[in-house]
Amino acid sequence: MRLAKRIEKLPPYLFVEISRKIAEKRAKGEEVISFGIGDPDFPTPSHIIERLCLAAQDPANHRYPETAGLPKLRQAITGWYKKRFGVSLDADKEVLPLIGAKEGIVHIALCFIDPHDIALVPDPAYPPYTLGTILACGRPYYMPLIEENGFLPDLNAIPAGVLKQARLLWINYPNNPTGAVASIDFFNRVVKLARQHNLAVCHDGPYTEAAFDGYQPVSFMQADGAKEVGVEFHSLSKIYNMTGWRIGMVVGNADMVDALKRVKSNMDSGIPQAIQYAGIEALTGPQESIQEQNAKYQKRRDLVVDMLNRIGVEARSPKAGLYVWAKVPGGYTSVDFADDLLEQVGVVVTPGIGYGKSGEGYVRLSLTISDADLVKGLSRLAEWHDRKAGLEQRSKLT
Ligand SMILES: *Cc1c(COP(=O)(O)O)cnc(C)c1O
Image 1: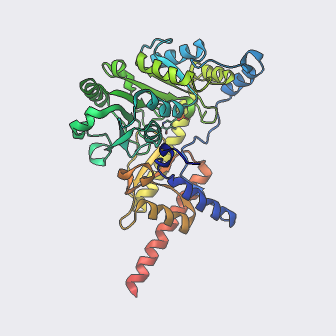
Image 2: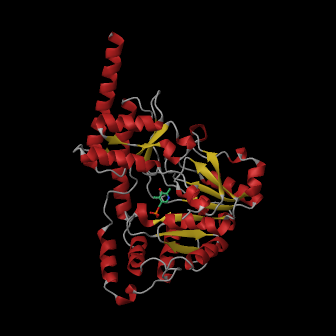
Image 3: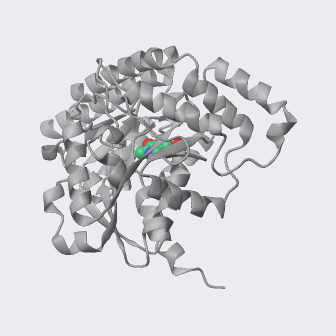
């Protein structure tokens, strides 16, 4: 048998190799502390679980759900967007619940990418933007996110020939992995570019609620004319610690939402209804847990950034998101540095190259690590530094 080319074209998954090394260490009885995974360690708030349990008892929820989701869930989503961002959405035409944002992110490529069409994809980025493009037999064109530009893509640097063949434009703020944020002014410029070149914009915004120091991230939907050119993917995963329940949404341009609904109605049968009820409870119930959680993440962020800078690993304090993007010290590639930390002190960080070529020179540390592990991990980073300093000292003496 022969695999389809689209499968062969999928890039090798760097993280498989890291997982193998971690498993090897653990098998030897060594304790590994991981800053690698972006998955909230806090539990789903209890009122949401209680609603889920209640809904699970109702036989009506044991049957096939609909792709479009319960009208009440779509209304809960429009209510949340109105309250949080002041954005009005039509619950029937401009909202579609998803089996997690990732599902919609990959499938929307099938709606807009014909073979050889281009999708504009940030580099570094969350891998599914590229993977969806490749599965649709399209080509990603990478827009470098560099520090000098605040990790925003330089929209003026995209060649005219590329823009002509481009159908989709991907952006993601607060950004994973760089921790950068975008202003409404940037989103307005994206809308302008999309209008000029007939691009469909996909903004991925699952981290709008994870913000620090009083900062409030904006939604792409708040940009002037955003609804004419694009959609926003969002998710309950990071806001309510529901990564395992699989529930997210896409909102915005009615034609784009409808196209995705057409693909999905032929592929899946929607989100299990009990989980939809849990989602309604999450979006409409008490929201205090978000602020409490952010206070905890903020403390972790400060501890991580302080330690990194103390050991000579340059890192800026992110205003939002769940990641610290740190510069690899001189003489290492991102993979070498991650390997060295794992080998020397059993600490896992993610090499930036795993998110794209422009991620080289950086590593990502996730703040979704328990406080106990965080403290342990940080003291190991200090130990790594002391050992290295000791070695350098000794090599100078000899
Ligand atoms: C976590 C994350 C998502 C959300 O994924 P779900 O499928 O909803 O769990 C989407 N985009 C980015 C950039 C993420 O980091």
